[in-house]
Length: 466
Image (cartoon, rainbow, N blue to C red):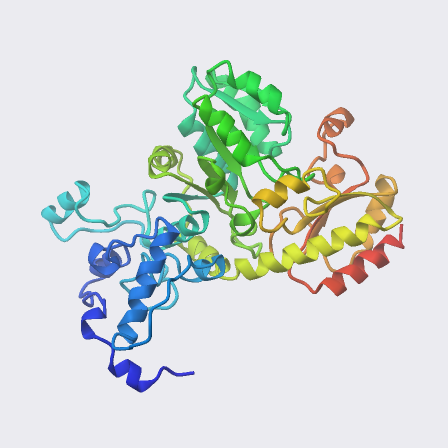
């Protein structure tokens, strides 16, 4: 419905916060960045800042209305993913509904005074692509709003996000990292094999072995605790609030890789974590067409990580940032569908005679259900399960599936399936697989947004082919 003409006429011109049209391209680029006069202080580092700005925009239209005002709640994630960083953030200086792709690698200054103002922090702008970009900044603001973070750094991959965080926050020859035996396998290998070469002490603990963690923390030298929640592929969950309390009491930072949850289902910073990292390739981008990572936390911590990020060069391209911004706008819808599909499939398979065990924290029978229920709004779009067959029988099941692709990754629109023993853990010894809980009959299924009934029929017919 078009807005009422009477309401439009009543809009106060003093409330129309439009920046002057730029005469040169550099001024337009500057307008894409947060300007105090444009945002009225709403930089959107915290999602709570969205409310006053949206309220003011509404007041501009109904300024003369006599209807009583109502208190606004914090915007939902569904609204945040659409508007954060754009309508009420870094893009307030442009009338484009979609975020422009600013592809320039370097940005120029009007004169020396303009440059000095930038260097002294009196004027916000951009200097060089490796240090920042207007399109990337929109993405970072949007993720900050979702994670309830002061700041976010977007990187070229999830692994780059993990490495930059560890190198920045754990000092060589003096640091001590505590991680879990269930954390992401490549991160675990980097911590074990690479950080140790820098003189950094490394301790591995079982995911929910609280007593061992307390004993390690009591030594007083732990710098950072890092783990995934949920884990891959067994979807175990850690009590983030409890771990954060234990670590903070002993002066240690907490970093949670929340990739398998997505910011829609879990917000570790609100539970006490200091840093949250994601492979943005997965649920955040959501279309299996871009690789990226992100790190969110306080301004102070992200600033330390950003320095390392500049040095190791894990910069994302503006084009990739734009694709993620576009993908983010449907993330809440996608994840809601994936949550429901995974839960329904987990319940179906839990009672199927050809399935020995289902791993999914949304099931009431899961040993991790009580933790997931306390800190997640949904249990995610992945389930793992053990088929009542051997290696080759499971291969026949997977080959008989018609809808999902046999592929790595997760979180996209298309369903993906894999047999970890012959994909993610290929080449590892039987002992290594056993230590990681990888059986020959284990299947990991990442659900897309296809109709549940179609996926159900496909899974059931494939089970008959074993």
